[in-house]
Every structure is written in C-alpha cells, then in structure tokens.
Amino acid sequence: MRASKIFCGALYSSTVICSLSGFAFSADLDVSGNLPAVSAVNGKVEFLGGGADADGIDSDGLFYGGAALSVPLGETFGFQADLTALNTFGDTAYGGAMHFFTRDPNAYLLGGVGGYVDTGSGHMVWGGGESELYLGNFTLRAIAGVSDTKVSGFGRDTDFLGIAEASFYATDNLRFSAEVSTVTRFESANIGVEWLMQDQLNMPVAFHATAALGEDGYVAAAAGLNFYFGGSESNKSLIRRHREDDPRIEAFPGSAVNFGGTKLMNGGPRCVPDADILEQYSYDTCIGDYVGNPD
Image 1: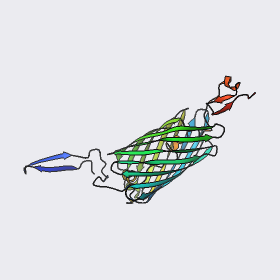
Image 2: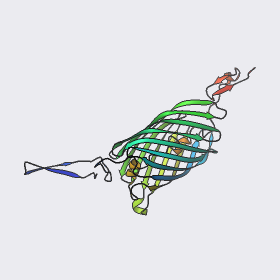
Image 3: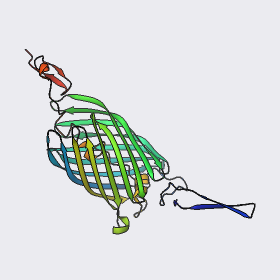
Image 4: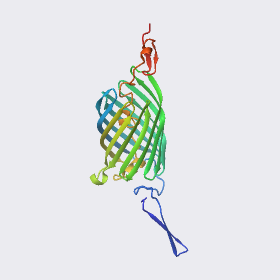
C-alpha cells in the first residue's frame, strides 16, 4: 500500500472528498487481504565479522555465521529451524533453535521459540514466547522465557530471559533497529542497520552492521552480509521478507554480538569472592559454588 495513495469518493454527485490514507505503511506492503504465515519455503544465510572487548578480558575478534530454513504449515502456521556458530573470547559456541508460530503478515506474529547453545566450557537450554507487532513501517518484537545454564566450575543457574526490539524501515529495503536483552543475567543493548541491495545487485543480498554495549564494560561491533533465498518472489523487498518469510535467526538469543558478552562466552562471572568467605568454606553466589577451606 503506497504511503501517498489517495482514496477519493463522490458526495451528492458533485462534491469530491479525498483523504490521504496509509501514511504509516510502506509502499511495498500488501494489505488487501489474507496472506499465509509463510509465503513459501525460504531461507537465509548470514555472516558477521568484527571484534569484542570487556573488563578483565583481552579484546578478541568476533566471527559469526548463521543459517535458517522456514516452511509453511498450511496457511496459518509456520516453522523455522536455525543453526549458528560464534567465535570470540577464545571460545567457539554452536547454537540451534526452532520457531513455531502463527502469523498475519499485515498485523502480527505469535509463537514459541527455544534452543540449545554449547561452548565447550558451558551450555544453555532456553525457551519462551515470541511475538511481533507490525505497525506500518515499524515492527515491535519481544521474547520472554527462561534459560537453564551450566558453566564448568561455576555451577548451574535458571534465569529469566528477555528480549525487546524496535525496528524502523526507512525504505522498503533499509531497516534500522534497536534492541535490549537480558540473557544469563547479562544485560546488553545493540543497534543495527540492514540494507537489501536487491535493486543494485539484482539479487537478494543485504549488508548488515551492528554494535553492542553490555555490563562489565562489554563492547562489540561487527558487519557482514545476509543472503536470502526462496519465498514466493525472488525480488521481494526487505520488509516483506521479514514479515512474509523468515523470522529472525535466534539460535544465540539477543543477537550474536550480545551473546558474545554472556558468561557462556567469557568463562563465567567476572568477580572475586570476598576474603572473609574464603575462610568459611561456604556457598558463594558470585561463582555459584562452594569456596574456602573445608576444614
């Protein structure tokens, strides 16, 4: 529906009333009728490269790769499987996730999402509810759930997991986003931009860049490319791909650059037990284990 589309109607056969409608809608959106939850089998492959740093940890490169495959389940439901790999802070993490959802591409997405992450020194199982709300050129997105985390030498934790994101499509092929998240009790935020170069390259390839800030002085930045394939149309715009085809890859909850700052990727909580506790052999919440002299 074009932002400047004008609907005109005759009144008493001589007076014309025209009203401007659809100001908030992107020019490429189809709001004329019902659309399936997933337009057709489709997928995405994405790569990012950059760097990360945090207090008490040497800065390191950050390299990420992810892939997703989405399939329609009738007209009302959809399913997506994600696979990802991330290397930073001397660890390589592998993650997988599954989405099951219902969606009206003109209005909303509702469903469940969950996955598993393994870094060698730790692992996390997580799951929760996933939602998206489409308001013209804006998309609001949220995940709320729980994570169960085990890091070698640092005990086991069950925590709330939450993600909230707002996106704005400046054009049909240019998206700006801002996100906040809490994953394994690590609070962080990131901003991003994605530009689908369909018109320039005549193929569905997008440039993607993102930067993150988090607790304990965590900073990260990365840039790369997203490759889209499948779907109902080969020349579909970015906003339509995001709403009619694949939900966001979520095998690392809270985005790859945010997840690089969690305790799974930096060797556990960065804190030192109190000296008095060391003499008592008691449970220290800092590291999630018993410390001190048992005698």
